[in-house]
Length: 151
Ligand SMILES: Cc1cc2nc3c(=O)[nH]c(=O)nc-3n(C[C@H](O)[C@H](O)[C@H](O)COP(=O)(O)O)c2cc1C
Image 1 (cartoon, rainbow, N blue to C red):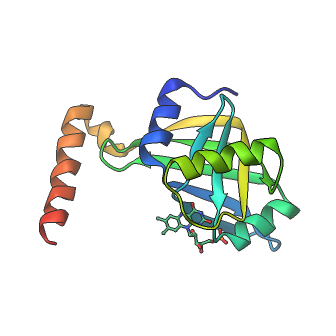
Image 2 (tube, helix red, strand yellow; image 1 turned 90 degrees about the horizontal axis):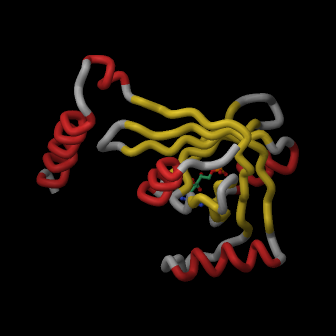
């Protein structure tokens, strides 16, 4: 499975992804990662800064799903794959350099890389009513603007 240009664009613009793993008791574990980035054509990475449960879950079961959604266009993608935790080596060093260049000053304990096996678009039901993307964007830009104005 290869990331399309549009998938890469949404991930690069949003950076914030919701990452699901499987707990030992079979329940889901979902947490946000603001360091999501496409890595090459077939992987998504994020930094483990404070993600103990996600990292522990991957050690037991590498299954992962990641959602990335643009809250203005109300579109995004879901990705499924298998994750690994990188703590050293050439790829780890390259990823660390990427985050440092992007301005991250946090302590990065490890980097999680998910190789993508499946991907599907996510589209809000707002589009079911026949609205164009411009109309949906205008609606949600107005919503966020109003929130910002509330201070
Ligand atoms: C907007 C947002 C972005 C975050 N980004 C990251 C991140 O990139 N890496 C990280 O380790 N934690 C990040 N966190 C913190 C984790 O989501 C948080 O510590 C969470 O409880 C970890 O849960 P887990 O151990 O189940 O992964 C972020 C939290 C928020 C609210």
